Length: 603
Image (cartoon, rainbow, N blue to C red; front, top):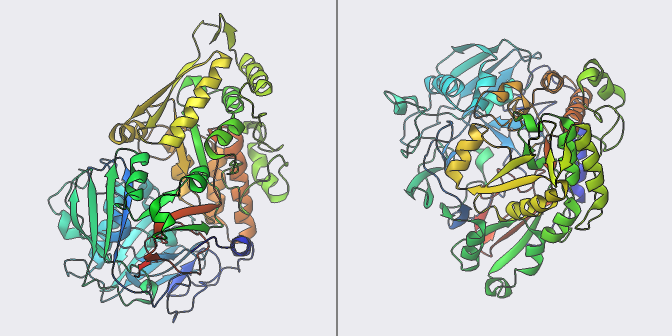
């Protein structure tokens, strides 16, 4: 399957975000939407981007760089393998990736809330079963929420802290009452993983282990060798095979992930036929290095998958816990000195566009360089004194001339550094105390493109008298250091959706300044950002919601926490010809829920 026209997809995103209906008095019991009603009726046949007649059987083999040493993806300790949660664990509700944020019944047959969303009540399906055949009970649900909320990764704690009471209201019914105004909470709770309480009796949930978690999902762990491979096999007795939500999904009999030293080795394994699907991130490589025999013979197909999701943020993050990076002028200088135009041309042929803001490529993003107006300006006004330059007036990323010398950018960066108290002395940038400007960029082994980008950047910084050291480490060390924010600068990527909400607190919330294991790697502490997140999750209409996200986008981008690199508005997937996917693509494109969920194998 070749390139798919994505103009229509982008129009769908605008319509989906900007034309939301007013909230109904009570959510439909078969599903719930952040705004309005679910698009699918109670008697829907399948998700619109799934093929309900897809053949069953076959296998897919993915390649990953790095390794794993735990089968528990819900705790801080250990590194879990790819796919463990998505394939073996289920949630009360399941997400449709054809709508900004709509959930339909999965383990739960119904969901009910009130207009103010002060509570949510789920009723479990009587047929829901774990892979060992035992029923999924209300007790399992309550235990899962409490355990994840108190012992799991930090992302679970915030939402659980907004729950005042949890009640078993019937044999299959559970009710959560909230202590905080947060309209997203019923949906957030609907996506919490449900685990089997009895499996964990007498065990410490926080200790990493290679014991497979008993879930209710379509697959079970069949075979593994820690750090080398893991295979998931389709559960022949999976309870949910006939649900409309699952029809056309989870079609493959086997999903395998093989682990290699670095991405280059994974690609060679794909060329050799050991891997059956490969996601290419380098557009130059896509055009120039896919002439190997399997492609020429038609055994490997190149597919381009468009999407309409925001760009998110990817680049090199400053750890502002370090005194060196606490002055915004220093960060702006280092952003200016990052020769994006040269780096992008060298590594990518200049093809992918640069990320302009955290929510760019969507209706939720700010307009670069434009001043805040209307509702966005009103939301930011109370925080005016604390906002950095550009938040209200408008901010645009510096643009270089593309040459290796990049003289204009270097002059601008030098002036900013001088304002911040840094001057060149004997060829070395130093502060008034004579301390040199030096820092370390920590990256994980095998991240070839990012390492190459950092290498070019390090050379460019020498023109400023800055000594930047590039250090590469294995995935276990990298996990430990980033969990504890033990780095000066590192590679940073955060994907965002068309329906941002509570997860934004985990990304940018002030608790992450000191609390380990959050996603606030930059260490930002912004009351303005937290106020925008609170406005987002309490918004009762799409206009207020969009304004709050655009205001947050301005705070984050003008905060100069990350040196943005490139993004792609398409995904490039090379795969064996036997692996197929529906012509009707979801709004989010190649995203969780797409490959391998709606793919199938057909000779």
